[in-house]
Image (cartoon, rainbow, N blue to C red):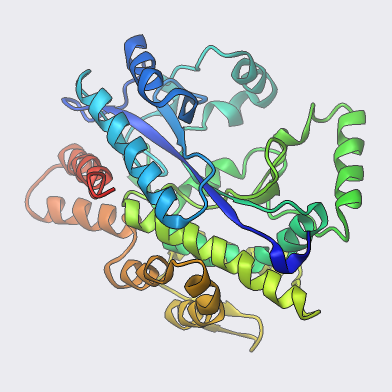
Length: 381
């Protein structure tokens, strides 16, 4: 198959936290019937996560963003409806505003038991939820080439997704505290740059032979070649509280890969910058979200995030038109204008405090906002 004929498919995975509607705290021991009911309606598209208070959903292999949106609407709607029957509610947020990881219980599943044993303390802190976007690419070497190039744009997508400003009842000062937790694991962060798929395979083989990992599923990079599907999986972003925000980020990721493929057809490519430089933008996105800009390495200086966003939208517009998702990528402007979930959480908290609420009451108000916002748009499929 030629690069020109390369079809793109897309799949979206989201992780949610299950909260008690009365206490707004996490459901540390959700009823077994909840997962059974979800499985009955969604089958393989829903699964338990590392901790019992978490649940993961994943769309099917979708040919268009419109298909992915319909699928994700159904997934969110079903989890909301099932959880309602048990007095619980899902929240799509990178962290819970005040829950304690020490009180959470591990899901009794062989893979998770092994992870808990291997990761110990850093694993027990994984009370975090992300958004993962898979783009189907059949060509192995193309996947590897795109993985090296797309890392430049990942901080942009993180900045638009931030939804984890609180941790254990404290305002952390970071828009994505989730990454602080996840980066404590081995084999996370930006991936190495590889010249070929064969070079990537040699790295995986060396790690397996060295007894470091069982397989490539234990590589938890910000973007990785999926070990289960012929996809390039973006994993850096926080889960988005608003459905529209999640679709916008998926569209941006899809269109960016399409744009980079177009460049390759012309014997061009995006410059692969040193990881140290891209990591600085990753940190700025983690710390400030969209508020303080990032470095445009092409011009060598820090610029407002809106400038970088407009530049990216211009780069991928041709691809968005071809893939019929112009409205989806342009929603990123709405995120910038109105703020991410992290902005809304912080604003809700401070407004409650200013209105006379105590700290605990203000944090519960944040959970209430997350419950309601997670439900927005799920009937519009």
